[in-house]
Amino acid sequence: MGVLNTLSPSVVSGGPIIPGEVVQVIPVAAGSTIKAAQANIAANIQGTIGVTLGQSPVATGGPMVVATAGPAFVLLETVPLLVLANGETLFVSATQPGRATNVAPVNARSIGVIHDKTMYALKGGVVCDLQIGTGGSASAGSFDMLFSGTFSFGVD
Image (cartoon, rainbow, N blue to C red; front, side):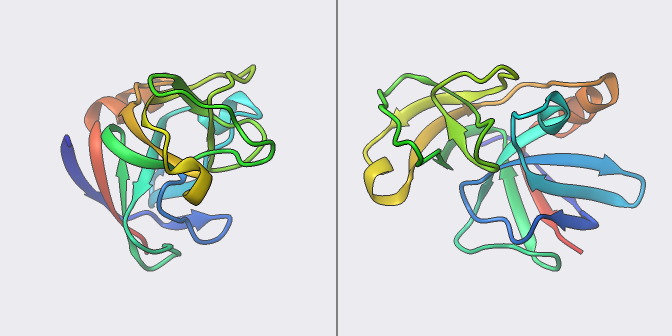
């Protein structure tokens, strides 16, 4: 999948993060903050964006793996229901935090392309070939370059 790095985020913002959520990782001096990404404003999609992997929700105190490349199950907007096609580009949603969409918002940040859309009707998500690049400020870009691939987060 890529490079595996272990960090110790100091905060999981906005409640437990569930597998398949699109998240923003914000590096700070004492660790990192992880929160559901949302393209409603540019600041919410700067820096490292990834998709959480695993089997169960993670709150402060649990380990978290975040992927930025390779195949991953990604949760999508469900209201309204999306019309999907394999091969379409996915973007961070502007309307539903932690979700992706195939409709580019004003503050578009792509995360990859749909590989298999069949799980959308049953599970609200798709298998996506993640291709998340760097974005945002110079410091955020250098964080992306250091930690590209798959991240393993021990949440404090």
